Image 1: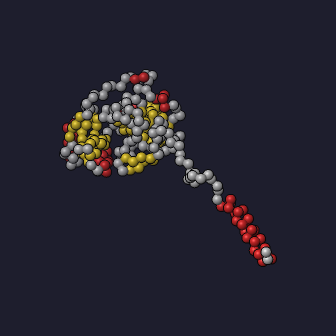
Image 2: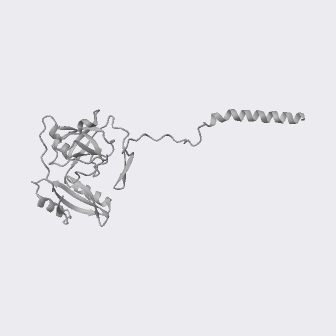
Length: 263
């Protein structure tokens, strides 16, 4: 081997050593088949990070710790009783539960009616409300505790509390000093104001009704010839409600096709 060859081999060997020393500083070794992406967040069964309703995506909070908000509460009852909730439970309108758009399911919150200072502790087991800027949808039993059945919607304060969810899975009748909730008739009256194939049109009408002072505006999905239809309704109406007066008011707004229906 010549002197030039020896020098050339020494230079190449030096470069190789230098490159091997640089590799750990630029990359990290991991077993074959593993991903470089961050591991996914742990999600309890039935929990969704986000969901879509009427074409709008809603995002669920990581937890309810420290949650505190004020807004408008509504309530839902007989027309949803016995149906599955977002948590998979069957909705029992007499239980102390509520629907919220972004709090994790099974979060426990205290809801205070700011008009009369009545409070009730409820467990979030459903999603909603999806009308206007409403904050929370109370079960019939919780609405009774807040004395908001008549008005339909009330301003409330909602605060997350550190309390086991099982502690609020009771009916108002079992609470100390509470009287049994009056029975809701199997057939309740509603006014159907309109029905739309396009959910956006249903939301627009519901918003107009709320701005016009109507309480308890709901959007109910039904199937007509196997196609979804969004019905905009007012109710359930109390026995003492002047149905004709409401229909006349709707007619004056150009909604003369509104009609009384029962569920």
